[in-house]
Image (tube, rainbow, N blue to C red; front, side, top):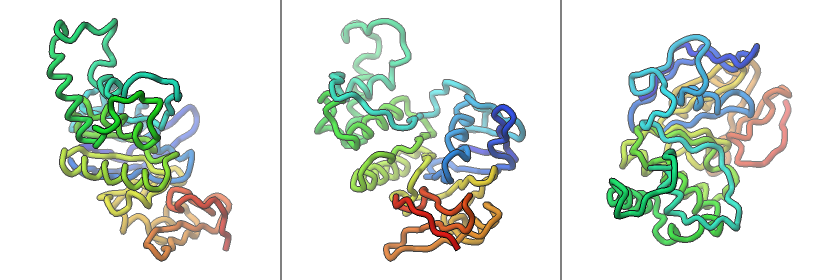
Length: 276
């Protein structure tokens, strides 16, 4: 589904990352991790065809990235809806099917494929378990409810690859867990490859097939057990890193330099620094 070979990206005079090699198979659940500013979102934009490689090769579904491909669903970093927004949740989902069309929509009995679109929206609402609130105004819904509907929107055109940029950010812990479980179920049952940029890996850790960890302009890739280790991250950062585990099995990354003393993507949200 996704392949990078010795890939690099430059933005202006800065090399964001280089030497990235990665293979992702159909139906895999993959997390993109690393400190802020290392190019995690840039990877998604490269896959979308929005940012070109400066070196190496990328293939998405066996082809070069193509901007506007319907084979990729994309959920950008979370945007909040104003509480006064009256558009219904089902209409937000419907935008995933025809939101790129110009002009006012035709009445249902005139629009070609209207019944098919209505059925698809109903399928998506059921898929994300939003039946109980999908007809309510989007501004009146909780963050977790809104996120379910936005995931449905991203899946509207039956993509093979779903890209999500920090979809768990700003959600409380129960909603993080429920959205993570939802994405894992979609990945398995719909055979959709899921690539998620995560601030905190712990809610999704048990579902992951593969990890891409960016740091110091490079990336380590592999299974979570291969990547989230003291040895791998020490080599990646070029300075001593320890991976510790809490009593519930959650990993915590602790560094010994100011540049890598704390990694929030693996810390479950307590922002403090530990130094050796």
